[in-house]
Length: 248
Image (cartoon, rainbow, N blue to C red; front, top):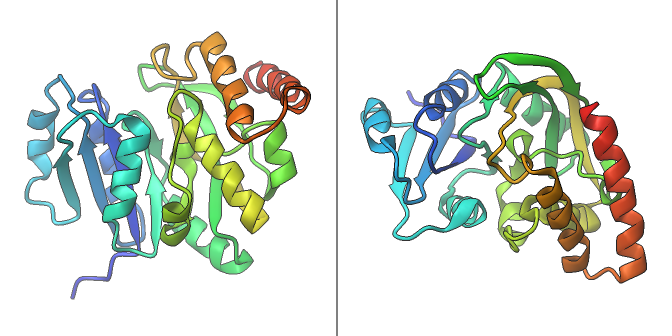
């Protein structure tokens, strides 16, 4: 008997042929029944060849986007396709530790929240771990999240109905941050598991790799949230201070 799938794991895939296998295997090694949606976002590398390994795996679904949607659009597409009560996001160059999803499901059921994130261990581009660990609070409020984004997208487990209620928008900013803010503004609190259940790969090409670009995008987050100039400046200063502390 096959167990009913509880979680749809959504992996946007672009120029990730060298890392995606480790990401997928980390999901397949979780202790809960999952389905995996890998969305090839017009990737120009040899991703098709890598994914041949999984063509007989009923838990892995490989989808080609008809046009480039970007990470946010691919995640939204995955959410629209999900038939499970929960969705989780994983970037194709990140890895999950064993037991991540099981612990998050338990935490969501214990607390009644709609979203749960975890701490993250930073990896170098070659996959070796650094000494840096970024913690997360057990309870994350909307006001706290405004001051800095402590929720990493690859760490999130979220109720599917809520993900559909707040799709990711404005990819010229940190679109996931906007989504978390909207969710917490309505639902109040997110849960955090302060363990290194996400291995987060540092890169120089991603949105967070260029710190000046990332700062500009964070400014846009506050403006897209409808905040005035003074309020945006206040939260941006808080973001900058937390960012310096986080990566020291």
